[in-house]
Amino acid sequence: MTDTCSNAQLLGQMLAGSWTTQAIYVAAELGIADLLAKGPLTPEELADRTGSHRGALCRVLRALASIGIFAEDSGGRFCLTPLADRLRSDAPGSQRWFAIMMGAEFYQSWGNLLFAVQTGEDAFRKTFGASFFDYMTRHPERHRIYDAAMEGIHGLETEPVLDAYDFSSIRTVVDVGGGNGSTLAAILKRYPAMKGILFELPAVADRAAAVVAGLGLDGRCRIVGGDFFSSVPAGADAYVMRHVIHDWDDDKAAAILRNCREAMAPGGKILVLENVIQPGNGPGFGKWLDLMMLVVSGRERTEEQYRHLFRQAGLSLSRVVPTAAGISVVEGVRAT
Image (tube, rainbow, N blue to C red; front, side):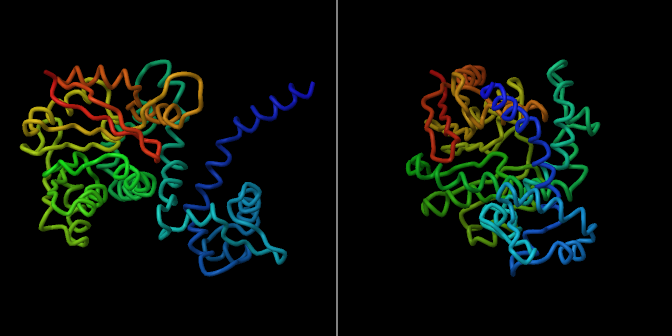
């Protein structure tokens, strides 16, 4: 009977996971952590500053405090906790913007997961009437939130990748789909003799130019706008793609990889930075991220699936280098 009850409770907690997502989203959207950065405040003070209902906000904060996000003191004021601190806009690796994405567009799209499973079609498109990237292009204010969300999540991966993989033999690297340039900037800072090219869609490239210039790397880093389904800058020793290939099905992913293979210098490398799904029943973030990608029309892959994808693009998978951040560097070279 005890096992039956505990299993029922565990399953109940899992089923209520969406409650947690939405409560964190509300706190992130309202900027509660930013308001508490200077010290504790009452729910009434927080409600007045955010234009919220006093009683309703108090109930959200009380629930979040029960799982370690915020804490209520003996005077009825709420304060930051280590978990809540990560929701500050200016916190290193801030997850505020990711919480907003997960609670808004992504949350709504997950409601159509059954549609995606039954049809194999795009749940995001079903929800919003456009593909994820088309939607972001049409809503630049949401795209900026998405960029900040990805930086907050993926920015913590950069140093572990640089610690795990030796880039020292690379003279010129192209960061394909490199967003705001933060990954490429970190690589160039670690390797002062290296030169880099950030390759992105023209609108994204324009935003990245200010970031790169602000880091003092404009002399070693070029920014090129374009479409990686058409071509990529030629002649580099390595082509890095972090969380790019997982956005696409096999045919489109192979097209991107094929363009990189055709462009790279003799002896060049393809470096795909992704979560590689491990076999077996063990827990793994990549298995759940794969469902997120199913919702937005992408996928995570196993090592064998990457091996097949590389062959499809005329490449040979040479090795998979795991990192302390959970992602791996999947290295490919021209197939012989």
